[in-house]
Length: 333
Image 1: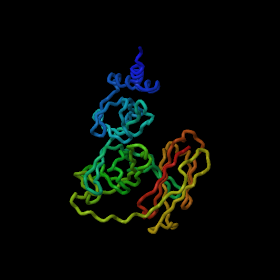
Image 2 (image 1 turned 45 degrees about the horizontal axis):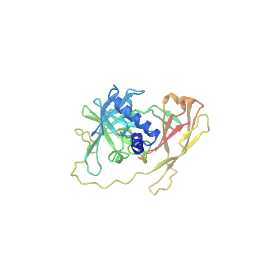
Image 3 (image 1 turned 135 degrees about the horizontal axis):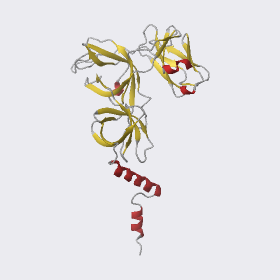
Image 4 (image 1 turned 135 degrees about the vertical axis):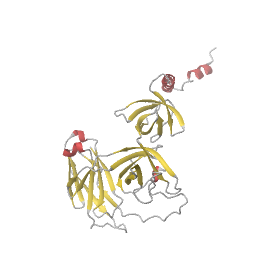
């Protein structure tokens, strides 16, 4: 006599449907065969969890593609220690029913600062790069800016506290520190509300050293832990750019308006705007802009290679009253 209960139990040992059994068998094969793969590496995740990743080459040497083993998880912004180097996760494919795939960015420096409340010294590995940049002043193009960097670092409870005007010390050469100041902190583009992790992108420009910069600790604006907390400084005047964040090739001109507010949050139309544009200079012949008072017009010629490129539009004032520079990122479509 056939024991149907035992038959059903054995049939469903790898899943209660044919699809689930195929998935589970695939997971088992990957797990079993991964140890024989030269690309299977042992890494340390967030300095505490030892894990295996299948790591392969990407388009550039400072990036790598990775695949987790089945039922293992890695999130955007996670720190990865591998091969004596530091990396962090910059993208994830969340179609991860069997494995999770993504991309790693190699870090190239450490930045240090103090927690604004506890004065504890915080340090993070990050990726620092120099962006393409050009400026617009009264309708004229300025030379590419030097002393300007983009920094990518993981989003966490410490990094999310970094604000505009935060200063960092990159190096000390002949007792002279190299200081950079945050002019924009993007906490939104690479942070998703419905998933864990993410990373922040900071825009920094060169700055001068101050008496309370600590060269030995490589900390700007150093405050000894037992020092009394100073009252917060008044908030800076606000400005914004009004306009759409998409620009079509061969399409109509996009118009962007500079809006400045006084200390009572009332629009002040007496302020002279200074515009800056950041974009890949390879396409400078195909991007047209014209300033007209508080407005700037931007259009893109009909050139397919422009599709997907980004144009960053930044605003500040001529007299330097608006220290919190405003910017928007436009995508060419």
